[in-house]
Image (cartoon, rainbow, N blue to C red; front, side, top):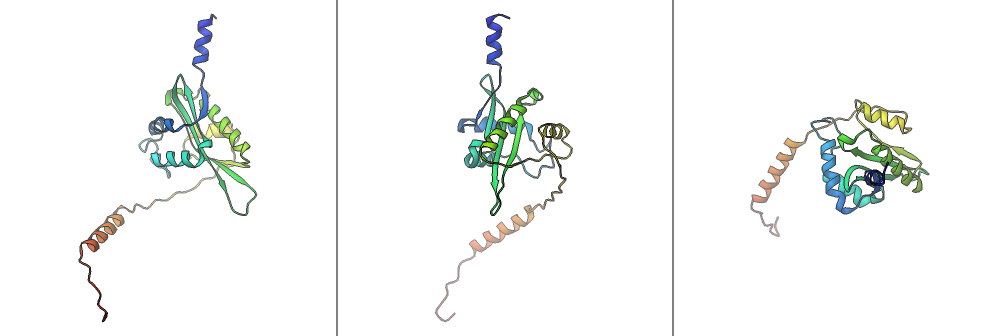
Length: 186
């Protein structure tokens, strides 16, 4: 191997680093590719820019990106949870994703290990995550990382669109009605 090959290898290694504000758009767009409603229609939590921004604003130390040749190719977004009157501090891996064409290349492993180490340093005693029951690759990955005791949950949804339309219509109607002034005799 000559020096040129060595330089190529160094340039092509994945770097895990803290997410920066300038990374928000790239992380969001990568998440759109990975977590789409068409691909995962049963998500009780949906991928949206507000959640990404909120996680970054509230727990930026647990927001990581994987960079390859100057391009964001993966991310891990986490948070911590402290319950009152509990000695335990919990960590949650909220989102973990990598470029689809780069999956199974060790990027998620590097992201997870870095996030786990940050959680440990912060005093987290239990790390939680979730995935769809039929997401076998994710289940396999998480089991390999040491997660156990999977629990099935049932998430129910209630679409409030019609009630929201009725409420908005009612409020608009109230605003368009002239206000009656009260007299002292009322």
